[in-house]
Image (cartoon, rainbow, N blue to C red; front, side, top):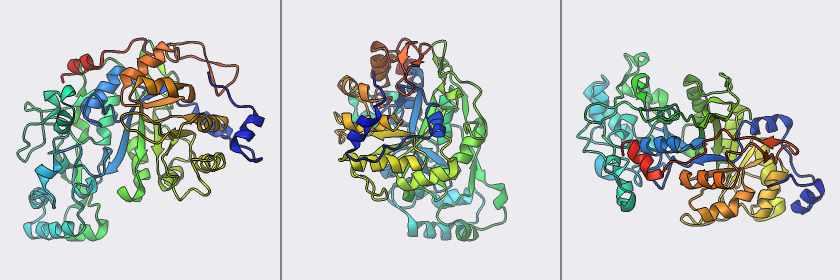
Length: 473
């Protein structure tokens, strides 16, 4: 098991005489909100199902992952998405279905909200001036719900294809299969729910123009709001039903703020407010439970560790710190090269790596998230023995990404305290087999002399393919 490094060894590792940065007592307390050896279902799964869709996250929940991991973006009308690519061409049929320009249905969409034809036509022309083809921020959420977000997976992975991943033709209506997810959808899956659908399999999510905008024209609203034209409201109150296949796991959410240019300037505040509105913000609604596992079920989503924030962006890290104040667990993700905003940062040297840790800790990060090497992603290895040793000497959790194989687990597990994984099935089983899960007597690397107890975690891992079949795919 890992041990905290003695002070003199930590100094040797830095290659300088300055002390290694350390988490404050308050930051250590927030760090401990997160379970040790946590399993983060990366985009739900990129291996078994179309990433960041209902199928992937229902699967990850039922497998027993501790967190459902996602990336956050914002649509033109202000709906926060749980979706990785800012360009939707890879994971949807947006090129074929909506075309390269402003959707041909855009004027009719405006008119359906009660705006007159001339006003709507003029707004379409304004939209065209700033339109970026296939980028989420250029589309209203109602438009994105007409897309097929599952067929691409079947085409890319015929050996794992499932008919229920794909959609029937939208015909101007919502699709029938897998959708571009709203962040609220992801919350619902973590709470044991699924989408409410009609008899044709299309999700039920009505929308209308915001009542507060009555009497205003699109021209006036465009001047007031700019490119993010937040004129619609969606009725999410009836958008979900209890999942009949829910087995009782309640995972948390591990959510990523993208680069600041992708989203509105106040994206972090928007996420804070949405977490608050949906009962997921521990700063306004403290969690009542303290046990990460209860009677063989994941319980992280009911604890103070229910939400973990993450980002690659120094600017987004600073903005998140301004909003959340370092009081919610925060992971800074490492990618080569080091961002220019971090003074003296260099991932390849001990002094430079130390500078990175010191800088991100000053903005509330208690967790390091380095890339790891290996198939299929072949990322640069940023979780070497010396790098992980510096992270632990600083008192930070180490959450490498992303695991796809048992070989990666064997190499990386001694250096890791949590795992972003595309294969929750493999990762969970490996941790159980090697005594890091379902064990009442794990030496706690952050509290020498204490034992860490996760013996109430699920002791068995369901069959991955059978779980998808059970869920109706």
